[in-house]
Length: 78
Image (cartoon, rainbow, N blue to C red; front, side, top):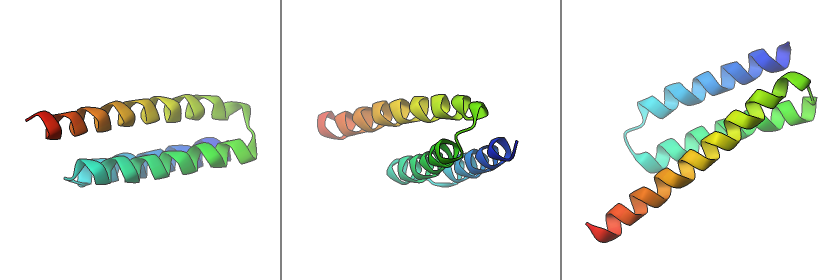
């Protein structure tokens, strides 16, 4: 149960910081670091309840990669 609460807390902080930053690169870095921390913590505590956090972390990494590629392409083409 503690794993779930800690992960929810870390992801909530990451989301708040994500909304606070204006720069897209800072958003990606902050959110990725915090979500990585949440996933790593869940892994080390190896709880069955951590599986949704692994999935959320993987989805976030995929979205941040798409966002970064899209932003990079926009800077080069426009």
